[in-house]
Length: 227
Image 1 (cartoon, helix red, strand yellow):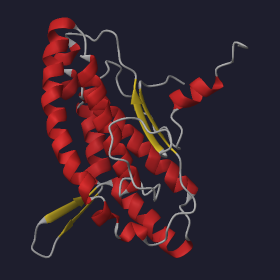
Image 2 (cartoon, helix red, strand yellow; image 1 turned 90 degrees about the vertical axis):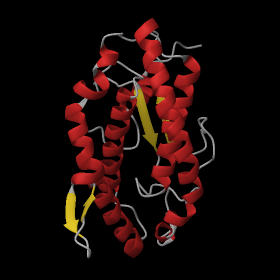
Image 3 (cartoon, one colour; image 1 turned 90 degrees about the horizontal axis):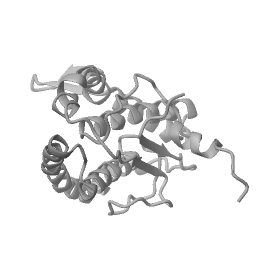
């Protein structure tokens, strides 16, 4: 199986609190405030990277590392909160990788990127994935609110709510459900890396379920040279 340069890994913490998920929306407010600022910087720097790739074919290293850090931070917060509810360990306030935290994200930095693809991949080529991501994040279930407005909920949110209710009554996160939630998050984050111009490799239409990314498994299975 071909691996993808955006690597998303996670480990399910057991046991999980039955009730902590009820208040995580309050606990993550400091992270949401910081992420709001970081994502503004992410957008601005992505435009700078766009110009740099168009002119030189290279993604500036410092901007690349910062943007990967923003994705990593976002994934850790989502994993703790309502993107997965996979851990009760509070996310660290850092862009850097934290090996001791159960959620991880890394992107292989390319030496060279296509100057032509940078003009179309983030909008035209990504349209099929945008449709899928819209369903995963917003369009799986729609209902009218009490004031007549339409409220949309994504498939990931629906599945995490099912996991939360199951956790409340049983104290356990169903394994198959967890694998599916991780696979869907992995799909979204791969697309995010692609449209943020971090790779020319087109995201696969493939649901790699479970906590371990295929790229991580491939590295772990490589034979040792004996040294």
